[in-house]
Length: 238
Image (cartoon, rainbow, N blue to C red; front, side):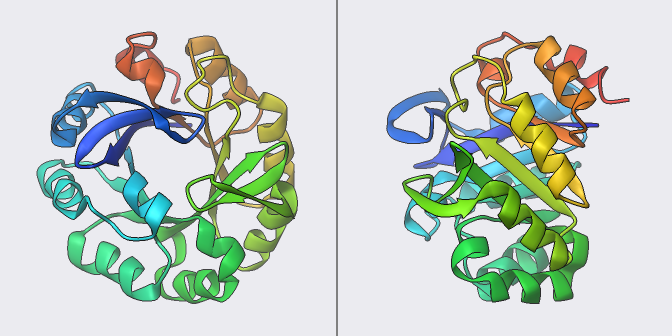
């Protein structure tokens, strides 16, 4: 299992939101690169970066911060937020040097884009499935669709997607524990790797997600608040 420290960027700063609400924001670093270097120094083997402005608006306002992180760290960077065209996906992978991009909203609104991206980039494409009450949410979690998260996972598997990042919106930023059952259901619905996100508050949460079959865990607020020591979490990877 892989531990992914999260770096959420909004307005050029490293922030955390509560349940995806842009109005409930805490700024943890004025410079996201400082967070990236800190987690790398602590032993992280991957970073999970989210362009929140891209997720909400579909257009990035954080390109310089993203480039700075990718150029400055020696570990792979997974990037989500605003991946809604082949041009953007190709630019991030081929020009910026991101190791893997996460397609979210477009998986619902433009499934053909996922197919095209997977054909060209294979396992460098992941799909982010964000859900509330088991139903998929899009556009920075603002809009709830009528599509079941597990149904979408099955469709993505059929397209050749090898990695899904599943986020339970109701748990995100709440430090109240993850939705382990939803992760277990997602693992059953999807043939590839499922990375769990949302609600992780302590090492026991990580252990429970690992037992549920998660191939990875994204940790955000618990790291920034000091509830989880990254070095301790990394010991659970093997």
